[in-house]
Length: 248
Image 1 (spheres, rainbow, N blue to C red):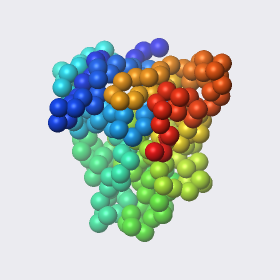
Image 2 (tube, rainbow, N blue to C red):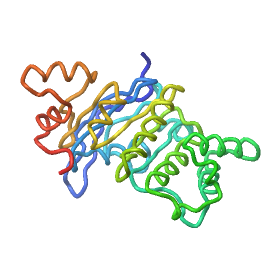
Image 3 (tube, rainbow, N blue to C red):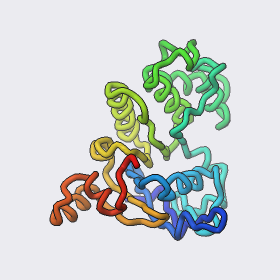
């Protein structure tokens, strides 16, 4: 299986405190990787560096075995980000929001219109395309967030807590959309504090704490390993490895 992304010895410090300590892991093409960690583990910092929002103090990131610094524009065009915070403009309609973000990747004319329609249809918001986000429910806002991040058809998507704060039905709809994206060939890095979501959609896990990896590997193999010491669920394993509750 080919590696679409490889993080090598990533380091980052703030105010003299090292928050990412030589982190190394990879993402296989076509998988949904669960990237997990308690608050303050360095997870968000790592995601920001991968998504080029922040810079590292050391280490490299390879995209298809090539350093992203050597062709940063190509990497950015191949990457989609669905952040935890809503990333849209309240004074633009759903359609115009997706259109704006998609246009940043060079889409124009007919190609742009088709991409916007496809993204909004995918998340079930095409019929609401002329409405403004403030009129949407929490689940619809989350789906608009996803549409803005996928309209340019990225090969790799980072999804940071995409279901936080929404009702169970909306969460199920979003999880089904994520599985469909993956089935269509998109690779996904997925973060969540809801371990049942990780259980449902992720095939492999990377668990970090205090800027270092404390657990990594195939989800089922990790569960088998720790079941022998009475840790039967992913939530049990997470607490055992980090010493922290999922929602601390």
